[in-house]
Image (tube, rainbow, N blue to C red):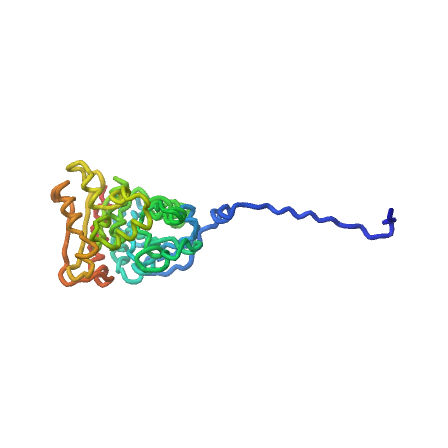
Length: 331
């Protein structure tokens, strides 16, 4: 026995540590505005947020025209503007088209917003050596599919991200939700993003009023499309899934005369000096399938002398935004 009457009191501090799933904290991560710049009397915002479907942070950009001037907004809605979703190609992120695409002047003139997601998840724990070993698979090359292979299925869910989650994030941000009419959307893209635009529209009939593409990878499941073969082998464990993510094959599966159930109009531009034209892209296969299904439904332009670059895209971007604006602003 020890006499403690002369000893100072002992303060016992109990520390309770609450363990929580790492994702719980991340889901609560509020979208962060990385930058805002004024362009063509509107504002381009870059925004970072946590993506539950890809289990990592994602960054996207959105251009919102100013409503200080009068422009046609359609449907008698004086506050909200329709939206074009732009999907970029291999190696790109949102900055390529925002800096080089030449889209915003026509968006301003038409009163149409323009959203630009990334092309893959980034910042997650490395899956394997293949993920960052080349420019046409993994980082910067998500192919707008939901992966089913081991490792990639956890993070590479770009179809869900582009068609559902990105819209939910935009709706959660007041200054976007106050300006955008999400019931009026169109979709477009370049190369891998052109593949994404076509397939996501075909897999979500009626979601997008119009679809367009610059030099799309139009038949990625074909043996003479190395980009598609590599991506689908890496992301989709069952080869029977491949055709369900191939625009040409999806159209072939449709009942004759039913293209109008998917969207109101399709536009494709292809440069004939594109080095990937005959070796990777094969847009005529999609054109042939679409024409066979619904004669005269889509417009296909082969542009003499143009390559695969943003010089090509920036030249004809006005035509594509204006094409979408017609459908988006009609009642």
